[in-house]
Length: 364
Image (cartoon, rainbow, N blue to C red; front, top):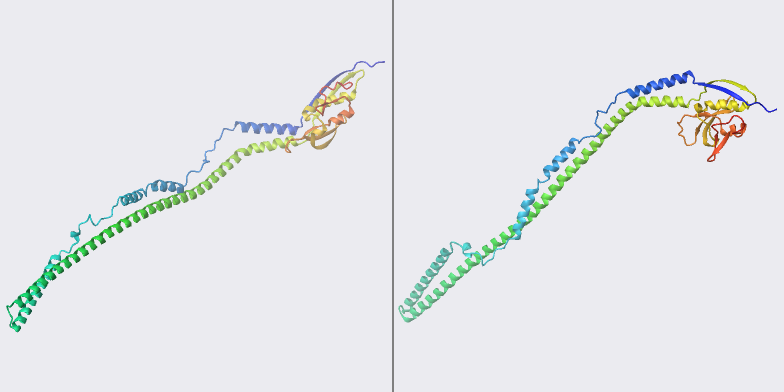
């Protein structure tokens, strides 16, 4: 005799433990408090300003930028003057300016001395003629004529010699002045080069000092920046602390395995599969326990015990690829469900999935 059709009415009620409900309400209150807290911006600075040394470096650099320019311009002008310098020519000079102003007096004295010597010579000739008794004779006249001619020659030679020596001395003095002028121009040229070198060296030294001050100031600025960043990090830590505490409570509550309180009322007539009816009731609460899937997709598996209605072993586990701090979910293994109720599990993409509609009667 065929069995009569089975009819079944099932009422499932799942209640969370009081401590879970209380903790959830407290977490919600904390979240509401955090959400209603007004925005608080950071009033401090996160960028360090320039230090005194950096400002001093900037001042030095700006002040010294053209400080050596006048010296350099002077050196350039002196060098330009050297390029147009023309040495003195003896022919273009006036040797008379160097002649001894007492030359005429020297020459006159020398001529006078020669005249005195000539007179003395004439006296000697006269005395000799008197002694010889030939005073006034032709021999005396000849001797005096020869003496006069010799005196004239000597005076001419003496005058020419004095003039020549004066000219030579004057031309030597003139040449010395020309040489000294040339040497002076060379010294000025060298001095201009030294001025240029000094200006370059001074500018370089100023730039080095400014760079050193800037480097020292930058080091101080970096230290100040680190201090400001540390203050900002501490402020952020204070702002995030309440949220971290809430996340800690949420993580602890989610990671704590707990069951539910289930009540079930069933009425049935005729035949039916009571085992499938029981798992159907259990599956009604599975969405609250984390869902079902292939055992091969799970990790960190922990056995919790037997479900009294189905006899299935219940586990706490994480899915592979979840972070270690992800709260575990609770449920059976698809392989064990398939062994107990063949046809209640199907494969999708090589993974075992419990059917959403078990059919309660024959593995639909």
